[in-house]
Amino acid sequence: MIHITNGGIANMRAVTFIMTIIVMFTLAACGGGGGSTGGSTSGSASSTGTLKLVCSGSLTKNLAGISITVPLPVGVTVATDAAGKVLSTAIVPSGITANAASIVPELTVYNAPSDSVAGSLAFVLVSSANAGFGAGEFASITVTVAAGASPPSGSIAAGSFKAVDISGANVSGLTAVIQ
Image 1 (cartoon, one colour):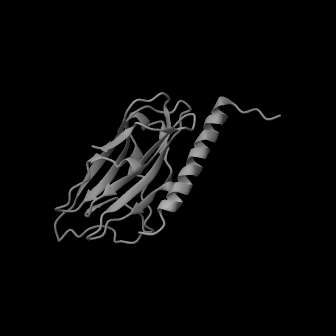
Image 2: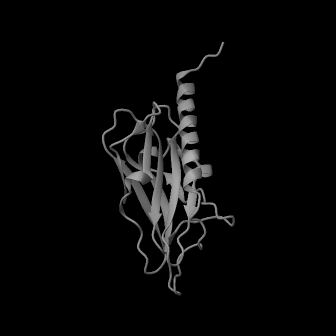
């Protein structure tokens, strides 16, 4: 006889969410690609900054995970290793998810901006707590900003932000902003 506990059901929901996101990122990653590791600094110094991602709206159930694509203007990059993979320190759960979620490295897709084409950073944040998490600040991204460039701010496009609640249902009515 198989006995599934409440935690087992939550884990299955998380696995279902992750598999859905894998398919979504696989399709989204087709085409586009390429680019350099960032914009030119023209000999001037660059600076480091932190983007805070915040979701707001009314929830009937806590969230199990978030999938988001953050636009990166020309001259704004994130730290990568020699293979071009985003460093684990570049995107971290913060605010309400600081000790209750993780970033899924296998689902992180970074399209570095070139000297003339904007880039993007897509990732998935999954709750490690059975109770999930509420609305509020959920992630911080450390970026390098070339001299003369401006970091992104404001609302994330609706199609670039998806949330799933702890019962596995898609959540509508939430918005995400970069602060």
